[in-house]
Length: 351
Picture 1 (tube, one colour):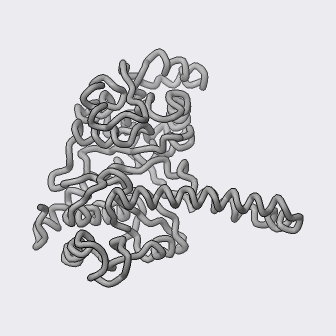
Picture 2: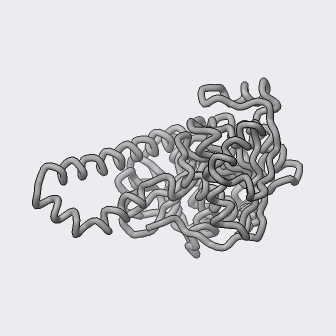
């Protein structure tokens, strides 16, 4: 089960933070080169960062002849810097320059595998929010037993939330599931400690009431055990809980793959069985490999913003560019605006 793909608008200009990530600029530039070759008619990457370092990587990867545009930026945001602080102190960072490029119309989206807090801050302050959105949310795809993806948000943009924020996350996630996954009427669930509307904190109970009145296909509260079973297409939670759950899930998936390998290595019959199961095992590994998704969109800001894993490989960067181009083609910003207008025109207020 691979993340969905589709043809995007020819030449969608996407700014790439070439200096963001644990392996920047090498992995970033290599991924951009792969994307430029694989999606030549779909995406036009613009590399933002130290021009000398970028050109050296282009020479190394054989991408110097592709005619990729480079926008020089003097500074870079380190992975351990504070988000808002880096925005103020490093106005000429590759991240700030890239988001301003989108703001000023020089690109339609940005991809960064750098500091998540800095990416959120730069996107908020340089791009602004879509009118009606109070808090943006990071959305990620979770594989389920139903052989389809579930969208979970927020997974790290907003740690402290109000009921209205969770309500709006439901709207953002519903649009994302429709636009990216092609689900005609996504089922929206609120992550909680029980199925009953009276369960959980005051935050959860108030958010539940708002979602009931939203007009979304709200299926009520879902528990942690329900996520992988595919009980909801969209799982709504606050950024603190979502981030903890996501990182725990990543560790479990990595542990599961290594445990299977360890067991296979110790038994001859297991090795024979593994040979027969190799295609299935490969599909499972692919389904939990973040590089297939490429990155997670920051929904609610006034532009396409894709946040990659800090350890992003060239494959992950290539796929992040594909996702960015997909969202441009499918007009997700317009879809979000339309849905917000529909909901806010009803009985549920936006504040």
